[in-house]
Length: 143
Image (cartoon, rainbow, N blue to C red; front, side):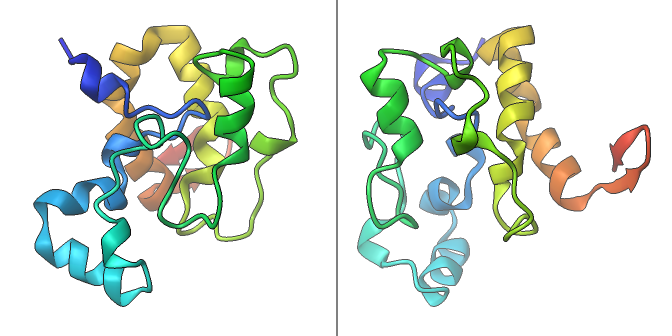
């Protein structure tokens, strides 16, 4: 069983902060150094995740508006909102090769269907499928 601290690392938008490089660099000095070399201030990492940080993310200049929206509505995930999916979750091609933002709606639907416990078990594979998979039309990305 996955503990509550790990489950807390799944952001309201469906991003799994527990598999994010900004979180994982706590146990990997080489990764930490790479992130700093890419301009991430070393005092902002490692990140503890969006929920523990109240919507703050080291690569965002201000509190995440999606996090604020969910918090104001006292929801756990965007899928609980009557406006789901809204434009905050709309996919975009911009930086899709390096940021997991296009995975949000897929992740949220997975969380709704199988629960956060099961989602966390598969989130790393989902991330690999998104960033490394080869698209097979009609069959999705294949690893």
